[in-house]
Amino acid sequence: MTGWYPLLLKLDGRKCVVFGGGAVAQRKACGLLDAAADVHIVSPRVTPELQEWANCGRLSWHEKEAEPHDMDGAELLFAATDRPELNRRLAEAAAERGIPANIADDGESGDFIVPAVLRRGDLILTASASGAGPALPLRIIGELAERYGHIYNENVEALRTIRGIVKANVADPAERRVLLGAAVTDEALAQWRTAGRLRDKDELIAQLRQLAKRTEGTDT
Image (tube, one colour):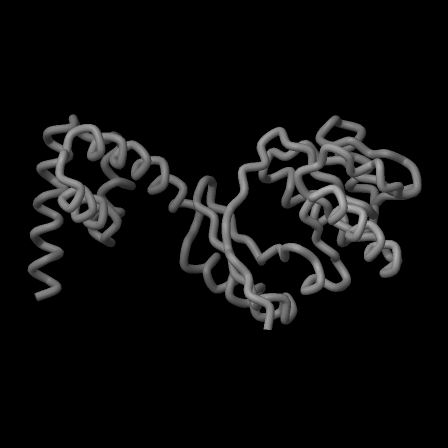
């Protein structure tokens, strides 16, 4: 079994090339656009949606057959044509250039696979079966979507502010971990959603310390 290392990549403004213009290529391009990548589609034909995205400038469409030089300068490559042999050749050309490639029709033979994704603003949840197929990850993502609604983006925004305040005002790393752990309890998350705004830093840290004590008491 191939071992996979999960991570999130920062692709803001970076060139990513998708070879192919069908439904699979459209899904790959959509995920890249969500990550604010500089998306280039290379294909003689594309779906109406891809055509619309190209017309409004969301991505670049190169209306042509795939050639290896089309991937020059790319951070990632997606071989998503309807021709498996071409996908394999494109992945080989990418390997020669040191560009990680995803092969849509044979994900396990590529350099990376794309998990099923749930986005709630800056909260990103993913699920993967390590190339065994999308059915189970999609089911899990559907269950997570029911559990974690859009309101969780408000939590992410509040927690980013809280983390900055705690890092700037609490010197002890161990206490920082305790306070940030208390900030994500159910009680705390409900408070951040209903407070309207965060209190001043001294009041916030005092509140976190109280939450930490209650959490510790519950654990014992």
